[in-house]
Image (cartoon, rainbow, N blue to C red; front, side, top):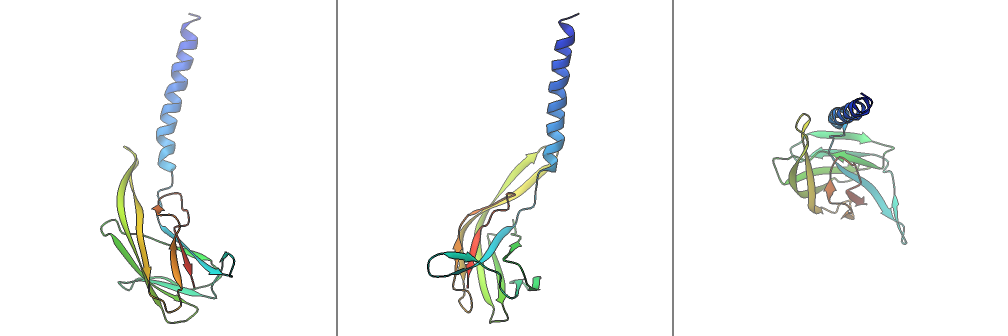
Length: 154
């Protein structure tokens, strides 16, 4: 009897932790967006900055952000059905620029019960140059970690 009780306790704790993990993994983040921040170069380093205002629209005309101020960046969704996303970015009322992001999509399984999440790998960025000086790809992995992916210099 003395050997059965510790064995049952160990089995119960293993069962509890395996069940708890299955349910808490569904609480993992599943929001996946391209993260872009605005920068200026002061001659010696890149400095994160906040434009006076900016607006962001998709190339298909869907307005995502309008006259946003007091923000140094934005998040934009990518479409798993295509391999390129295009945006129109207006900064401080200047002539808008168009920038495009080329990427590949992978489906990552969270768990059998929680489903899948699409993650992306950015391969290239391009832009027009009305107000945008350049766009730098700093992290090609667009995933649930919400890390900065591109720097927009203007």
